[in-house]
Amino acid sequence: MVRIAHERISGLFALAERAAGSDHPELADRYVRLARRIGMRYNVRLLPEYRELYCRDCSKFWVEGRTVRTRLRRGHRVRTCLACGRERRARSRAPKRVSSTGTESVFRPVPREEGVLAGSESEGAEEEPSEDEAEEP
Ligand SMILES: [Zn+2]
Image (cartoon, rainbow, N blue to C red; front, side, top):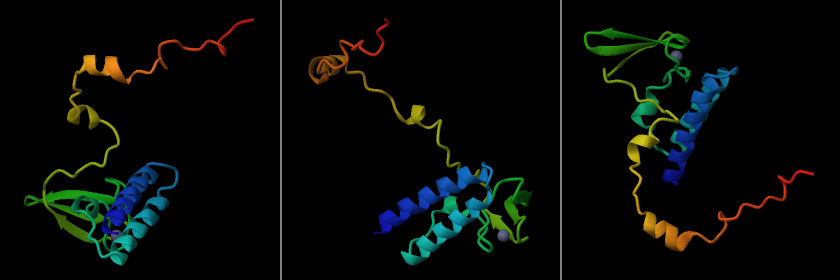
């Protein structure tokens, strides 16, 4: 149950991030509220990288420069919610990005086992492409 809750929460934050960049940024706030409600119901804490993405007072999804302002003050990042004005101190490490692209090439060295793949797995599906829909009259 807890794992499902975590999955739903991360899914909602992905949706929120997408909505924030779309024509309906107000949807992002709704996704944040839903994610928080799921967290409360199943008694799971939101991951720290998610907790830096929204205002804990008004559940506003934070977009840098638009709904939140980040300042460095004595080594701390101070984030001010532009919706309700609440200030919040955060550690001064770089915020994690929930990015959809760009990570795969780093984590995946492709193993090269050409002999194994060529021998057993192919079932002739790719050897002869059918031409019946490309036929010209
Ligand atoms: Zn706020």
